[in-house]
Length: 246
Image (tube, rainbow, N blue to C red; front, top):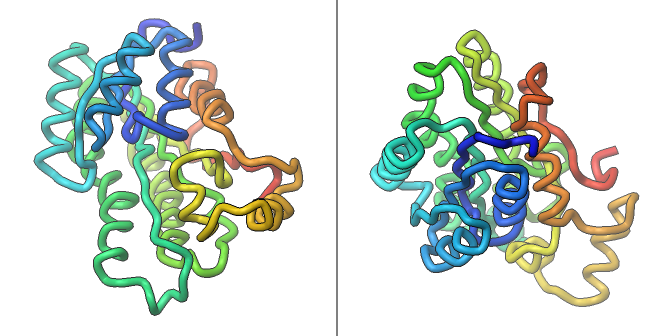
């Protein structure tokens, strides 16, 4: 029970890696607020793991402020924040990505980290404790062609993680990231462009361990980094990618 007595918010917790993290946290004793733009999905997962649901648009300041206030008022305090919500644009030449798609990717993948920090970092500072985990990507370390602005958003998240870690360390707050390779999540088809046996084989050939990341992989890594066992670890962007970035 690595997280017994801890309270946590997991954004994008209704599916994919976020669901895996929420399930792992709950299994390890945490009280989890499953936050997602898909309110029904958040309700279903929260009900299944004994957590609490919350509907949120992580790119919207008012929505994130409401989430932060709701979590603190409900739990009394917050120990862990997981910035997992993310989207991508379809694989295409960088100049062909529409401005609307670019803005949406940066709003969900980057601005959301700023917004949750704006509304929850003061709480962590006041308590002198807290763990923030950003779900970045191998795309921010070893970019794939035709996913240019998604790659850039995840590179931004990795740099933000390190900058946040340095600034918040004196306040007792740790900030880390995990870098998954693509996995069996709703975004997989978007990363590959099409989901065919041939496309999967080509994608998997770039991963030395020969398989995709799973929600369970992310849950295990996230649980460790947000637990007291990792109390000396901050500013790390841990690759959970089967060797993709070697």
